[in-house]
Image (cartoon, rainbow, N blue to C red; front, side, top):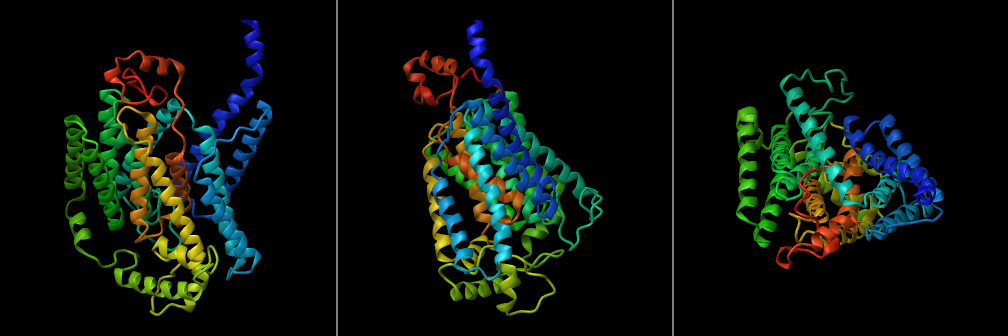
Length: 455
């Protein structure tokens, strides 16, 4: 007993560092949306320095353990190639404005460190269940706040902060489309949980209600891109349910969820939602569809001028005025199409790297979701894939991936979806082995017992 204590005691600081790393990484992800999407210099500084501090803590943890352990993720390779392209832009003076390229590159370094640390620290199924609970509560609380603020809004963030350039405020975001983008990534977490066997009936019902509130606020926010993204997520989920021939209970659960959403929208959204869906014109200070089409056309002209390396990461707002073909009072600081902006700034090489990244992501994730109703790794992969699909659909008509809070969450979810399956405790693997053969749905090392009914 004493010998074991002596052997284990040097590892306690390392274990504490591991816990601090896990919650530090995801704490930063939760902080970003509350700080107006982390779009201001002070919040970007905190995101970057926080990521760097956590990375230094990880290095310290390796020193305490006396060895370097790195869990590989296949997404690290396209991420590294993308970083190399940025370095080449700077080294060979391919950037139209190196200062902005360096500034945005530092943000991408912060995203990369968060992805790396999430991959190294989120390795157990119990950790994933705890984080699923935290993110579900966080998303429901944020959606409830957005509902209350929408009813009693005075045009200020948190009823206090006046946006410098105006906007369509919803929740903690100046732009309602970016609030919708956040919810698109958070909604699948409680939604998938509500249809699994990984929680008690009471927890599943609560998760379904939380997801319904979150979906409802996307529609009430008036974001048409967000509505389209949510529909795409639900269609993908429905296709997977049909393909995998899920039972009646799962179908009923999804039906009840949709009924709650419709009821909430009818009660709170009403006529405003109908008017928003019916019109394609601009509202508040939002760009109209005609202006967006002009930006797309001008952006293609920009791309054709420098199709291989692009104009440089982060240079779109600097270069675009030379190509603008219409008059507007708006400052066009983004392309309102993440794919087009990637083509303009990083050229075909950067765009090809993104395609490589996305293909690898989906290939890896779909291998894990064969039995997501009882396997924590499969459930997490499915929740990530649904949320990422939503934001990728929305990115065709907006610029969520230019918002640091949303971008950092997006890349971390990508990393989690493509990571190796979670490690399960030995006692749970033994419990699975003790089941009759006909009850085993996955190999022992990937399964959870049916007795795991709570977070």
